[in-house]
Image (cartoon, each protein chain N blue to C red):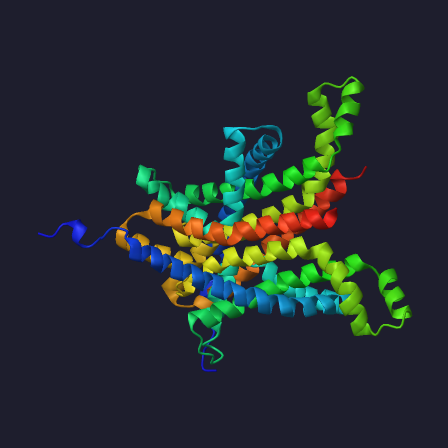
Length: 219
Length: 219
């Protein structure tokens, strides 16, 4: 007669390493999602600010990604990809969805930044003989960045936390790893606390630093 | 592309999906109401008090803001089992969302309260108002103006986050969708329909909030 303890084994040091490794994977997928998503998002934001027609059409498309839960987007894309003949592993599918999701948010932030600079300032830059790109690079970028940097950090941290949802596709990041460990060790509260501590350690320093930076800039 | 779309089962179960959408709305609205109450309390504690109570409020706010919502749901769902506390799926989602909303709303409220200069309180007190009148007639109307837009956003977030209920066995819109999807294997079709329903819900909320804003902020 076997007892239940045969099937479950307690939490040990290797599991902590396993969680640490999974935290790195969370960081990895969010790093790429935030970098690529922000890069695309800035250009989308630029497109949004150029003309009213683009703002309405492209804006409506981007709006969809902000109005549908990420978890639905993930399931939808993961099941849609094979239909059109794409073979994606959970990491690739999750990353693509996260990139689109990030860029939809960053587009709005970037547009806010560009609008914060204002037309008179940009006209002044052009009158001084700057080209369109010089105006963007040396006038709009530094001023706009200051205006929306906190909002961008908010988006980036949101993506870091939302990357937890990629676990439903089977990518073993921090939350999926803790689910696996919970099943084995039956020590839910301990493992969830450790996973929470990892997320907190990733997210809090950035948010703290951003708040400090914002305060310094506003002085 | 050799995939045949079958939309008929989706149309057949549309009434069920819409009914579960009401459950989504219910949990989102309840968590918002509770979140506003707790958020108000937390922000006032954080501004006015010192000692352990402030420490408690700050850790609530920072934990809610720096860990994934799904982790918070798991904590209420599985973590508290260690203390012999077991909630129904509805309560897990409600408590998880309330915890999350309170943290975010508390920071919004704090920003709102900080935007009112101290001199206004002194002015209204010297006009002979008591502190209750000061708050209800001078402070709150102005704070409401500042926090109204973030509050609307939080409401949208609450609806989107409630989709996580799917992962803790709550049959709101997403959970119901998953139930039907696994029953019929029409995963893509069902989740596409659900995405549309979420989009419509979000648009209705934003429209109503704009309508309410035009009534509330006439002055």
